[in-house]
Length: 324
Image (cartoon, rainbow, N blue to C red):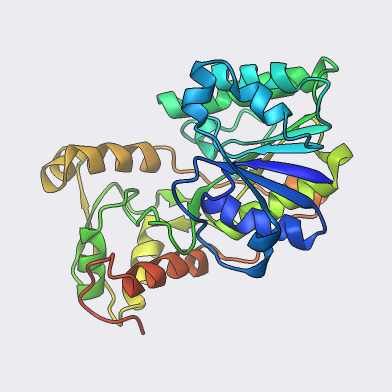
């Protein structure tokens, strides 16, 4: 098949595009063309690159026509963030492609009520942030489109994406680099909560695997949503113990109030932490396993370690000790 990947040089696309080439597909990678992919490999020599500024093209109304002009059988959209953007693309592609796959997010769910969280149950509150609200609305729009006999659609909802080239969500639910200085020094970590709050990561290549399997199993994927995460999730306490152990230490946890935590970090880091830890999510992947044959290769700590190792090798993480 001829497959167009919108955002093909991004983190997921960097793993997905080579997978699709190896599977025998003709692949078109659409991006702004300002940066190369995160991965190297001979597969990229077989990819057809197309440079498009999506924002500008959507503003002048040409984006849908540009996508349709690629004559793809399947379109995978990795960089759609608003309901309006999704609706415009669906309208443009209806009747013109066989399958539209959308990259959503577990942020479509709010704070957890019951674990694990499944795709078709009331396990969570509604999302309260703009990003999550838009992702939830896009997923609903695509499901309605498919249900009404229109374009065949599938939504893939990754957890917290990690892997080389990507800064991981850390043990307190943000990307504060100074936390890794503390972990690599064995210092006590101030945690806003009990330490039992959960984070569910996923390696970018496992997300790519899910997209590849959804393409190969269109009938099973049609009209469906899939949570795509690692087989297990980390709680804050366990994450701190594991991550500090990578540097030969055993950092302790000190529980603090949210007000105290805001005094210890920046407002931006505090807000991101609260958004992650108050959700305290763990997801089921049974639906993806049953329908798509999804089998993640990475446990969360292995995926995070790849990110950390890459960042250290690139001198982009301020650590005080080498990895063991």
